[in-house]
Length: 265
Image (cartoon, rainbow, N blue to C red):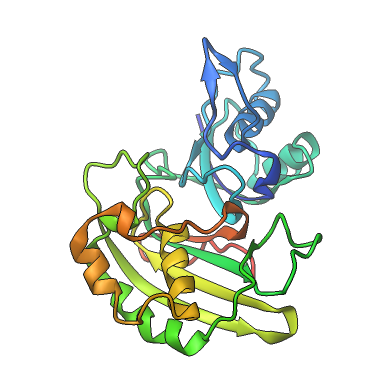
């Protein structure tokens, strides 16, 4: 059967994450993967929902995506654009298929990925903006971006990020490689936007790193604290986890290729 690769955008506010949550074959909560499975199987005319949908990243409850990547096999040979249009007529409005292409049968959305990019939006307004509450983390204490910029280079490289992994992490190793860690100040929007790129990330890793960086920005931690935190390999040392609402999966790179893009910030 033809295999398809699709780039997916979604508002994660009303989902219990990407990964399907089922018991005895019945979905227990609304998930992105669950909605995609329903749509793909409807298009494939498979009421038993046996067509699998595999995602590149298992984003958590409330986390958004501009460039999630999935793959699935269809029993019919349909042009990618036809699949895109068909799925978008079926899916709910908080999920959008941005592009679809046929790929080799050995392509795997998760295991073929080479690099992932996320960004995190922090609202710095005095009070929670009702129009941003689902799409930014809110942090109203005064921040010094220069202190944060000083700390960011210490996150770069291959390191053991056990301190920045939540207790639910189930990976065999906590060693990861971060290739990019930046912060941008958007004064007109009263926001800080963090960007992180790496080969993979641990459970809640980015949200925990943002929490530490925000504490550095307030002066509660020193800019040179990150090497000590990494060496400790102790989650309790990191303390604060930034809210899920500010996190976005933006882009996934396959074999060094940048032909799969998310959206602009």
